[in-house]
Image 1 (cartoon, helix red, strand yellow):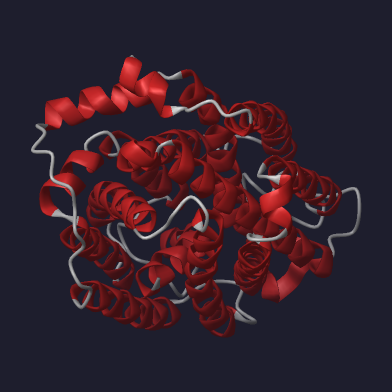
Image 2 (cartoon, rainbow, N blue to C red):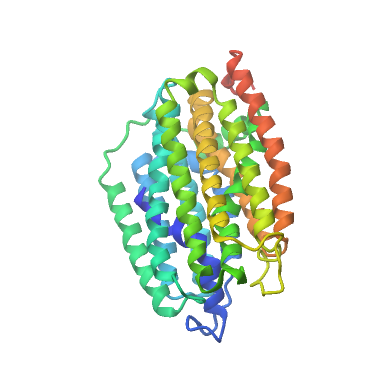
Amino acid sequence: MVIFTGFSTLSDVQTLIFDSARSPQSQGYVQGFSGDGFTGLAIIYITFAIANWIAPAVVEWIGHKTSLLLGGCTYAVYVGQFLYPNDIFLYSTSCLLGVGAAIIWCAQGGFLTLNSTDANMTRNSGIFTAFLTTAMLAGNIFMYFNLKGKREIDSKTRSNVSLVLFTVTSLGVFIFFCLKPTTLDKKDKKITDSLKQSFKVFMTRDMLFLSVFNTFVGLQMSFRSSIYSTCLGFTHQFGADARALATVNGISVAVGTTLGAVLVAILAKGLLKKIGRNPVVILAFLVTIVGYIIVFLNIPHMATIRQTTEWDKAFLTPNRYLAILCGFLFGVADAFQATQLSSILGVGWRGNSESAFALTKFTQCVASFLAFTFASHLSLSSHLAILTAFGIAGTVAFYVVEQRMVEGEVIEKEVEGG
């Protein structure tokens, strides 16, 4: 999971980094640079979404290990461009990363399924999520100490953190190189055949229902990972530590996600086996609602659009401890949702796991693309209203699919018979 340390850390604060790089009054100013962090993220996720349609064929063709290696290299290149911001390099590496991310996530989903059974899929999903968020935790702790007390991100700070995170990401690529190749059932399918199969899977009733849930997950992922962090960095009332507080949010999210994932892994064979996936997903939604209410009351509603001033008021006086608590709640909810989603995909679509995981990422990435595209054009209250609406619809949709599985309906028969 070392491979994600650089991207997870920098994506949380890249809008703040590039804001300093664009400002002539900033010590981090880069002449001629006009790149936008949210635009870069939007490019990543729309490319990610499109590439998910061919990712299963690529993984099947070159194998899991090579797929992980290629995908990892795109993460290293993207992190490297932070050393000296450049418009062309920012947006071109964003496209490249989108393709690489599709391949690496598809390969990881298939790798997880190959090494799991129906009985331990939930446990293994929890372990996987816990390891994944450990990287984000370490990266944000490092970033916090580099940004503490700084109202802007100067060139030296940007270069130092970028170089360290590039080195860590490159180490992740080397770890992938050391993996043993997996035994993959080669089917010698053409890319067109893979596309047809993926489309067939996508158009099944259950995958369409899950797409509603995945849309919510994608919107929520964008909000808690970058949009909310940017809000904290733009909140005037947090003073000189506002930028650093954005990274504390990343730490808080990582702690919440790790604890939630570990809890799922521990309870997988006991309580969760008895109650199923639905109660966990419903609890996750309720936790996010609590977080939304606190954010609504605690953060100025223009913080998604610009640096706020003392005249931009929230319903409460902005409190950093409440802000950090929300990150923790979002992290716990994310762990619950991610583990149960991986579990239902691995069990319900075992024969088409690469396609199922890729299509899940496709829907999430389209949602993230839209979220980042409109991030700086919508007030905070508008973001929260949209998230709440999709949260309700997505939770209901997940409940319907899970209930079909509980009642003994074999989901993949629809694919085979379609």
